Length: 222
Image (cartoon, rainbow, N blue to C red; front, side):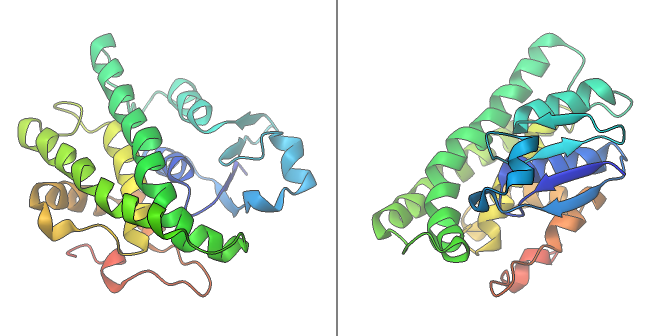
């Protein structure tokens, strides 16, 4: 069976899970705690990062975006990138915004400080980082609202990896209840459309032992 090593609070690993599900590819999801630096996992990916995909034949695909690109090239029947080159560039730009910029400015400051440090025993939350994350999330939600008001989906007329990437990143923050959805209804409406897709249901079932998500997290109607 195809296996994906992931962590529930990794945005790029969540995107890999969503991509596999959208393409209808069966896989075993194995939770990996990167901070443990397991020898067997390091043998698959010396960088020690999730996700890592292991195909049925033993082929190992490591590095988050490499996994995403591999899935798109290896299983093109259900494309998550548009056919035209300019459209593909726009999808990659928005995906990078939420997997890099949003991750750095929001996810690391909120999920990293509030939850990852706790479950990995890596110290106490750093209050200034949390304040920065809570401040930064507003303009990222405003950007989604800006795009959603002008396009059917974030990158254009079609549902793409851009939508999945942004939703994967936001869902990590939503797990700890720090997304002010009611302040940006356009972003909330867009997220509700993604949240209701069958591919998203396994993410909504994620539960970190001892750290349950807020009640609205798995509620399709918020």
